[in-house]
Length: 488
Ligand code: ADP
Image (cartoon, rainbow, N blue to C red):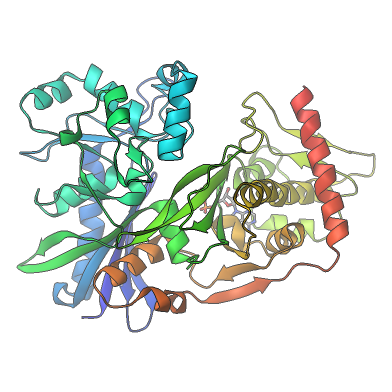
């Protein structure tokens, strides 16, 4: 047997990727888009049946391609925090899935008193927010008649997307989730590795409706594929799976995903860090019961600012054109851009901030502005990296990058210069899927933790410029620009 299938149940699409364990690479994939449902302003839902049917479809196409007898196992990575309610007896969803972006519980979360917020932070590592699962589960229990009926009958199951897929794929034999997905629910104590009684009480969630929580490398169950039983083993939330896929397995390793937004995870090893600057503490991954913690920070707008240049300003035909334009000038000519289209997240936490372009002169051209936008992505990442290093007292070893905008060599080089560390870009940019494969291999005993790094290959390493002071100076100017946006 020589294949592993990675299931990546993302927010906009679900994919199955067939990984050849001998060639150590992906050899086929199948993908389906998943519809979004917006019943009210700010509400975001998906049809849980659609998620499952499309997963089953893409999974089957990879199983058929490989031949069931040659698939050694299936690993799962998934969109985090989203909540599904279903019937334990039939597997039928009780209502639409409530997706992580959904803001329907934000008023409830804003009313949570300070003392409780402190406890939530202490126990779960998270900032109290509607984004995480707890208030969404509470909402379903209080507002959906079918959910209430199933609860009365003792048939209700509630869980994140991974737990629903596991339940369906094992035909109801497994009702479980993993540490990383549980760590995003705001109900899971990341120190004791158990559902937290006090938080369950506060949100009115009975423990019996929740899945059992297992390590990322647990054997979760088996899927029946035409008589052959394929183990499902290895589960993690998408960002955490990417941390593993990038082999960020030592304290001080960091990965940044440059997509629409920017996501950074920083491995803090066995220490769970309490951040003073609003970073989230979370479970990075676990090998068996041994947990590695991580700090997580995100920037709402990264690649989206490049899309803005392309779609709103008409400065670019494609996002990739930004590289050529940016390198057609030696610098921005003093122009700075602050990508605060939807406010500023960590470490500023100012939802009311808005974007700004400053330092414009009569000589400023399109190329300067494009370059300033790309540079702003790198500065935002330094904001996160500085906070994480300060909070943890751990130095950043380097950054491993992925996501659409990591293709931009100018941006990656500038990032190395601004952070003063190496940026390592892998051959395989599907870090999330690779993480699911690696966790599956670990779970099946087909590899060990020491050997994981060998599965990830560097494509290019961007080394920082020796001119540290020049780049520190630029970053200070950027911080001044940010301060100006906060005054308006
Ligand atoms: P997501 O998973 O968030 O949809 P992707 O990882 O697919 O995002 O990355 C898409 C984003 O990356 C878009 O916002 C796009 O503008 C940006 N992008 C893609 N290629 C480049 C490039 N060569 N230079 C700069 N930005 C890019």
